[in-house]
Amino acid sequence: MSALARRTLASLAPLVLAAPILAASAPHASAKPRSATNAAAAASQTPLELAKAARQLEELGAYGAAAVKLGELRRRVAPDADLDLALAMDLARNGAVDSAAALMWTPRMDAALADSLSLIRRHTYPWEREGLWVNGKFDGWNWYVARVRVELAATLGRWSDARRAAEVGALAHPLSGKEWLLLAVCAGRDGHLEEAEQAARQASALDPTLPEAFYLCGIYDWRAGDRETARRRFRAAALLDSTWVKPAEAYVRTRLPGTPPDSLPTRFLYGQRAAALLTSPVRPKVDEYIQVDETAEVETRGQPEVPESTMAALGTIDLALPVLVDERGRAVLNDLPWFPPEAVPPRVVAALVRCLTDWRFRPAMKNGLPFPVWASVDFSYKYSPGGKAPSGQKP
Image (cartoon, rainbow, N blue to C red; front, side):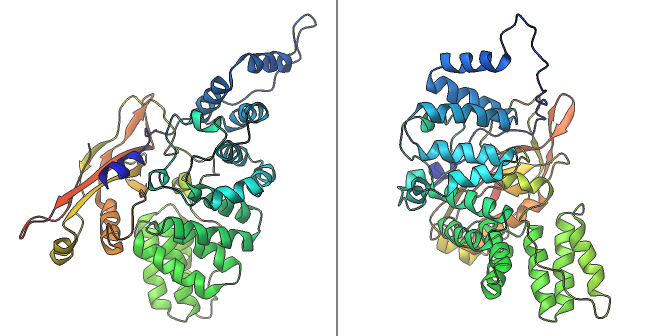
């Protein structure tokens, strides 16, 4: 399991600010128009060089420019679902949601979504992935197709499409709290309230670091008339992210007689956590690489609380967990690798993830400023009677 988990951790990158793309001024009468120059330059590149250039633009956060490169590449190579998926993500990150959706609802992407997959493909795309865009076959994980469809359909208000895709995503990655959170939001907006509530509670149980999951559970408690439990949920959400105002506002409103519950949300993740959304421009993305001056360093380790009886049955934990460390040195998000649900019980996954709130890092630095960066936390433990609980270590 360790090797599979480690393969999911692509080269991990900090947030960088992309330089703005400036409009070209009118060319000199004797100069070749810039569009013609760019077209000629693109034509001189091999498909693999064009793909690499697109990836490098992604690493700068220049998603619009990357989409232009990928569009040119798409005209020059055989149809490839990995390429369509990459282009859809770049288009969406640059605001072209309708164009992205047109790429994602096609027979080719239907086939990719239905791909049964080998286990080795159930991981995130690697950092240098341009070769996967030019070989004319689908090399990826069908979870990507489901997730991008969820996010696009939700943005467009197509909640039935979003709910169906979210159900596929949750089944593809059943131990990830984020997938259940997305299903909870989509099912709720589509009117499937029982499914939505169950998914929200599953999300908060699997990933106790998600304030959005606690907030959503609080809304359902409030709707059921249990204001006291709702307040506890809202307080938990506010403690996880004091900059997100909705839980604090909801907490105050539950104390006012006769106030109706908040409406169900239409968004999934807020603030820095939106980096986990595949179609959001919020960075850093876990599969992008950017050099930093100083990496994030562990200052305080959290200690997971796993009952000895559970560990006796499990025997061994060996898991590399990517975490997003913000400018304050807090682990605000995780990217749980895929592994068979029977390999690590959900209660153990929850315990490992929960302790991330106790980890503290010295933030990564770039150009003298702290930047968000993906780092790796290793949980390695082999059971021995009377031994210590699992410990997290940074490689």
